[in-house]
Image (cartoon, rainbow, N blue to C red; front, side, top):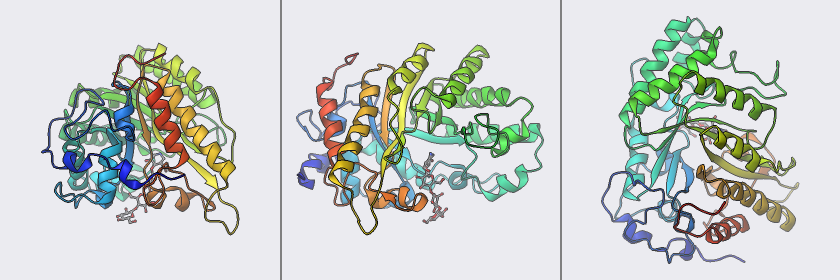
Length: 387
Ligand code: G3I
C-alpha cells in the first residue's frame, strides 16, 4: 500500500525558507520547520549520531534551487535526508576540467542547498580511476610519479580547501582495488588509475600523502577509503583491512571505511556486513554505507518487479541499515539517489532497475518503510544508539 507523497513532505515548506546556516554539528540536529513528530521522515527518525543521506546530481537538480519555491524533488530531498553526496559534481571531470581550471558552480549550488536545508555533505571523490577529464587521462599516460603527485596534491588541496569546514566526510580514495575477477585479482589499480600507475613503485606512499594533503586542507573532515563489493568480509575487504593497517602505521589521517552497497538481486546476500564493519571499527575507524541501492532484474516485458522481488529488496536495504545501526562507529548511511528515474542503474545494467527506495512519484516503496521502521526501533534522536 502506498502512502501519499504528502506524508513524505511534512514540514519542508518551512524548512525550505530557512536561510543558509553553517553545517550542523550533529548529524540530525533538528532544523526549524522539522519536528521529531514527523514520523515519516528518515532524517528525523535516525539516532542523533547517524546521518541518513542521498546522492544528488547538483548540476541537474539543484542549480535552479529557490528556497521560496523548491521543486517537488528538492522538497523530498530536504525532508528525508540529513546528508547529501554529490553524485557527480565533485568528481574530477566536473570540478577540474582543464589544467589549472576549477569549476565549482554545481558543487557550490549543492552545498548551498544542503546548508539551507540543514544537511551535511559527504565529499565524493578525490582519487578515482573513472570520470577523470581527458587532460588527466591523456597527460597521465606519461606522468612520472613526481608529476602525478604534484597534480594530485594541487587538486586535493584546492578542492578540499574550497569546501573547508563544510564537508564532514570525504571519500578521498574511491575503488582503488581491482576485483577478484580482474586480471591479476584483488590488488591496487596500478593500471587503470593514472595516479597509482605513475607511482606504482610505492602506491601506498601516494595514498598516505593524499590523505595527509586532504587533512591539512580540512582537519575536521573524516577521510574515507570507499569501494563496492566491500560490504562483507571477503578478499577485497581483507585487502582494504591490510591497507588500512599499513596506512595507519605510516601515520595517515585515515578516518573511515565506506562500503558502497550497490547490490543486485541477481546475486546472493552477504550476511557478514556487521562483522566487516566491526573489524574496521576496531582499528579506530568510522564506517559507512555510502551508495546503497538494490537493483532488480526485471522480467521480459515487465516494467515493474514481482511482489517477491520487492520484499527481498526491502530486506536487503534494511539489512545494510541494521548492520550500520548495530555498529556505533557507523556514521552515515547514504542511498545512491532517488527516484528510479534518476538512477544510474538502467544505463549500466540493461534489464535491471527499480533500485531506489522511492517510486517515481516519490511515494515510498517497502524498502523505505522497512528502513523507517528500523530507524524508529533504534530510539530516534539519542546517542549512543543500541549495540
Ligand atoms: O559529462 C556529461 C555532462 O556534461 C552531461 O550534462 C550529461 C548529460 O547526461 O552527461 C554527462 O556524463 C555523465 C556523467 O555521469 C557525469 O560526469 C554520464 O552520462 C553518466 O553516465 C555518468 O554516470 C555516473 C557514473 O558514476 C560514472 O562513472 C553516475 O551518474 C553516478 O551515479 C555513478 O556513481 C558511481 C560512484 O561515483 C562510485 N561508485 C559507483 C557509482 C555507480 O557507478
